[in-house]
Image 1 (cartoon, rainbow, N blue to C red):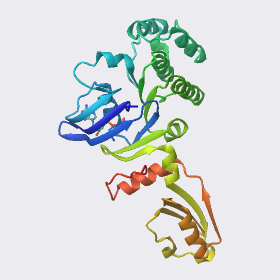
Image 2 (cartoon, helix red, strand yellow; image 1 turned 135 degrees about the horizontal axis):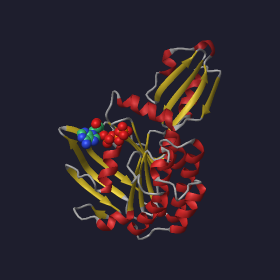
Image 3 (cartoon, rainbow, N blue to C red; image 1 turned 30 degrees about the vertical axis):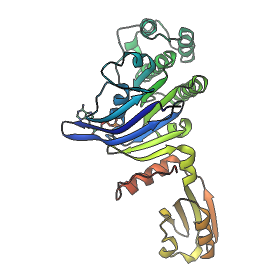
Length: 305
Ligand code: ATP
């Protein structure tokens, strides 16, 4: 199966400032892909290039097996972009906007739109400008889901939503991906959303990918250990290239390890640690470490062999 998005050597420069720097990126068809990066890392630029509303200065972009060119009308039906703050026609009523969308998208599922609005307790007669920003964000997502795209590009889609609506919306997105094999790219600062939804992810840092692969392989690549040193604490105990980070809490150390954990566990035990046990590592911790590492090395961290 060909990837839903394939970029190679893509560079985008805004007025002399490099926003994306020779980026290679693939998103597998049918996957939910998390795109994480700090402010200004280049996430929106990347999504807009995939949508075809921005043009790269260099490189090649294929979306759903088709090379992006000047004429992308067929792709417009298959690719949908939702971004926080993207204006909706505020003078429309909810029902009027849905009707407009129905005429725009050939694969529109009116029954699904109705169900989604019901779940969000949204009145079709309400003027869009009377909706809160969270409700407007939910409406945009409902429109995207009812349009049944093959590729859904989401740029901070849950901004402004309360926790209950957000959970509901994320669940709807997962249901849609499972039922229809929709590929989704979720650009966000919210690592918890990625942890809950995504099966692969990439981390952008200043216009370059510093990490790219499946969530499972990432979590088997990095481990966290709790080491109870007692009074035997010594800095040389943690002097090992596999150790990415040590957090010293008195007689206990939390150690983040790259690669297999067993050899280091054996090393700590042999050095007299009173207790060595693996503890859960979350994506937020991995993200923090990767960026910290990026501070002294710009080499991409690849954990997928
Ligand atoms: P955020 O998380 O803050 O939305 P982002 O990761 O989406 O950021 P982009 O919006 O893609 O980042 O911006 C990448 C870089 O390109 C930033 O340095 C930004 O200032 C710059 N940039 C983006 N759009 C333009 C533009 N139209 N003109 C000039 N510079 C731009």
